[in-house]
Length: 400
Figure 1 (tube, rainbow, N blue to C red):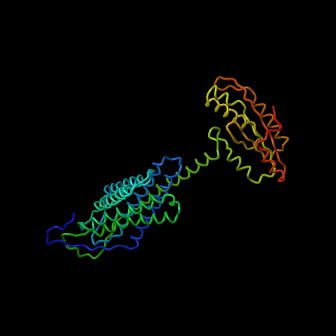
Figure 2 (cartoon, rainbow, N blue to C red):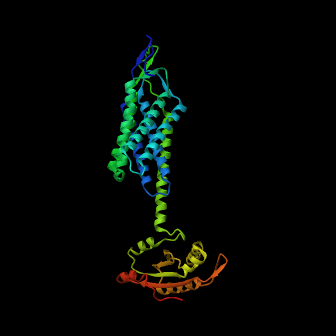
C-alpha cells in the first residue's frame, strides 16, 4: 500500500489533469454543500416534516456531492493506460460520505450548548467520511497499472479533510442565525466544497502509479464515466426535486394552518381581517354567534361541541348567498361577507339562515336547539368604510 515492490521491473507512470474538469468537480462540491446547507435550514424552522427528514436530505445532498466530486475529479485524470471502475464498489463508496454527513449535521444541529469537542468530533467524523469515500472509490479503479500511496501525503490528505471540515462546520454551527444571509451561506458552501476538493486532490497527489512492464504509448486515457454521470445527474435531480416539493408542501401546510380553521376548513379570522383591510368600498357583513356552546362542551365533551360547530358550518354553507364569503372568526362565531348583494336581499337571506339554524338538530342521538344571534352591518361608500369596520363586531338588528 505504501511501498513499491523490490524489483527492477518497476516503471512509474506520469498522469495529467484536465483543468476544466478539475474546476467542474470543485464547483459541484460547492453546489452540493450549498444545497445541503439550504436543506439544513429547514431543521431550524417549524416544518410539516420531521427534522430528521431534512437532516437526511441534507446528508444525502452532501454525501452525493462528495461522491460526485470524487468521481468527476477522477475522470479529470489521464494516464497512458486504459481505466475503468467496478460498479458495485463505486456504489458502496457513497455510504461513508452520506453517513458521515448525517452524523456531522446531527451533532452540529444539537440545541444544547456545544463545546469545542463537539465541533472537533463532527470535523473528525466528516473528514474521515470524506477520506473513506475517497479511498474506497480509489479501490474501485480497474486499470492496467498498480498504485501505492506516499505515506506522509496520504496522512496529510486525511488531516486536511478533518481540519477543513471542522472549520466549515464550526462556521456553519456558530453562525446559524446568519446562515439565511446568502453571503454567509455561499462562503460556508465554498469552504465545505474546498474541504472535499482539497482532500481529493491531496489524496491523488499521494498516489504513485506504476507497472511491471514499460508503457511506450503516449496516448493518454480517461475513464468512461457515461453511466456514472447519468446516475449522478439522476440522483441530484431526484434530491433537488424532493427538496423542492417538500418545501412547497411545507409552505402550503403553513398557509393552511395560518389562514384556515382546522375544524371546519373555513377561512379563519386572520384571512377575514386581511380581507377587511383591503379597499372595500361597499358591502354587507353578518356575524353569527352561537350561544350556550359551553354547556354542551361541559355536559357531553368537546368532541360533541365540535360536532355542533361542524353541523352549523355545513348549514351556513348550504344556505348563505352564493357569492358571499364565509369565515370562522372565533370558536363560536362565524362571519359572512358579501360585496355584491344588496343589503335588503342580504338581510332576507340572513333571516332565512337564522331560522334554519334554530331548528332542532340531532347529534349523537341528542336532540338540541342551537341558540343563535345574528348581527348585521353595511356600508355603501368609501366615506362610511371606517364606520363599517368599527361596526363589524357590534350586535344590531338582532334577528330571532
